[in-house]
Image (cartoon, rainbow, N blue to C red; front, side):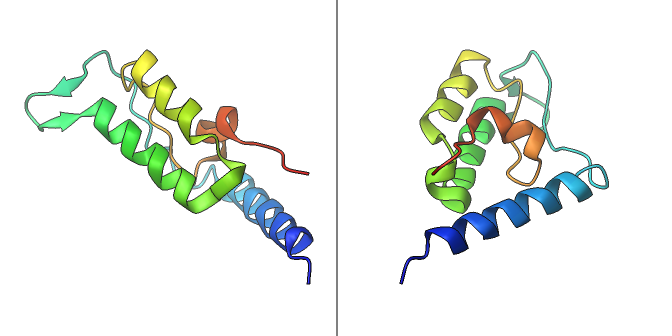
Length: 97
């Protein structure tokens, strides 16, 4: 049994739902110049990297985890990906055939 069409259809359906309902829930992305919030104890690069791992776990081969992690390091965690916000992860998505 070939599961690729089923997986692709499921992914497309989830992506369309996220696009449709994406405006209802604001993105969790943080845009800041700090790497570490001394008051809250938050390391933005670590949060960014953790979110890349979470998205890779959720989306598998559809998500470019290494590219996401490199962008976390390059931009010092300024744009944290949210797996449920299609706009924040769009640069890291693959179109598998």
